[in-house]
Length: 148
Image (tube, rainbow, N blue to C red; front, side, top):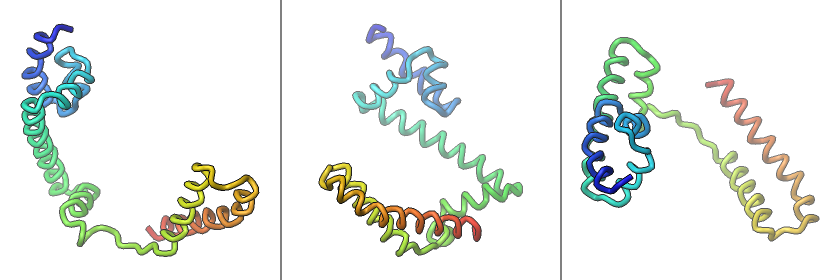
């Protein structure tokens, strides 16, 4: 595709993106490959700024729709908006110190195995600890799901 043709597609793409709201569908609407848009975003600061402005407008329209739905009684949307706007007040607060400790140990074990710093005998020796940590995480996850 000639460069001049691609350049001529930037403005129509931005107009389509403003209406449609997704890169893939907007690119299809103006008959360009979505990868072209990603190239423009990397290489063309002016296009990047214009895209960001349009993207902000699209996001504001989506927020307006979400707020309208929440105001009309969509409790799921209401909860989502409250959590996103005031997370310090509305996000779930669970402390997972033991779980995080177990998870940290698991990550360390897996990292060691992947880096091949452990022999097969050492891996087999650690497997009971690995299995116990997995079981602890599964049990805690199940308990949290039951009370959620």
